[in-house]
Image 1 (cartoon, rainbow, N blue to C red):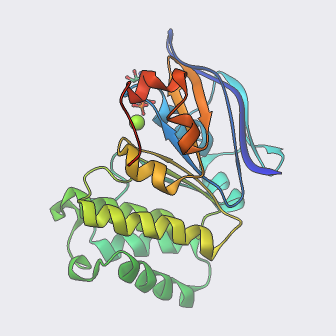
Image 2 (cartoon, protein in one colour; image 1 turned 180 degrees about the vertical axis):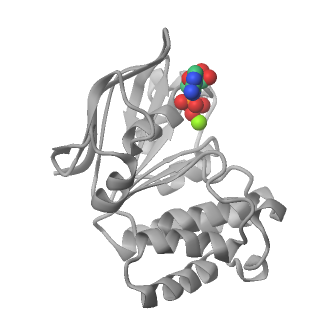
Length: 243
Ligand code: ADP
Ligand code: MG
């Protein structure tokens, strides 16, 4: 059974329809790439799934339960959803450690486990040199790493990453790709959806890709199949190849 599914989602901002009749499902252990031109509704879908936005139509279902009426914090705590937002995601006046500490106080009950998890994240994302620097002062890439570390503090079962590779240099992207695939080996009960415009980097970590355009899903399948799909040319263009 799929852990996360969304059925027939529709969302309009005032009279402007952004997505219409979008259905997707992610099984445990899967990494799904969500691709689409700017403005195609990727962030809107993430925000609907984690409860920041309400859809005008459709359902978000986790482990068979409709969570449309479940508030954000409960989706996070009871259903294990975590979002790395496209923008922000850190408290800019707090240091890297203080950000992680603040989240740990909300998502980790056992006080002794909090410091252990903070240290693990600092080490996983090589944040040692920045541990006591206010996020305000960090580079875009380091801030992104802190935001990702924060999203992983709760050991989430459903991880939504909205453009996690943006602002990261190529070596950091490689590290993050490894971290993402390790997340799946550490815990096979996880499901992950990632959006990004770094198409090659994204397709190389995902099991399945979904292409969103013109308010709907125009193609989906294995990365190698999707790039050959005629309907996906709206996003990839004519000459796109992997390798
Ligand atoms: P993507 O993440 O694929 O770039 P978004 O989901 O951010 O797309 O946005 C989809 C469309 O909805 C865009 O045209 C955007 O301008 C519009 N939009 C997003 N958020 C809002 C909002 N809060 N109010 C009005 N329009 C919005
Ligand atoms: Mg977006």
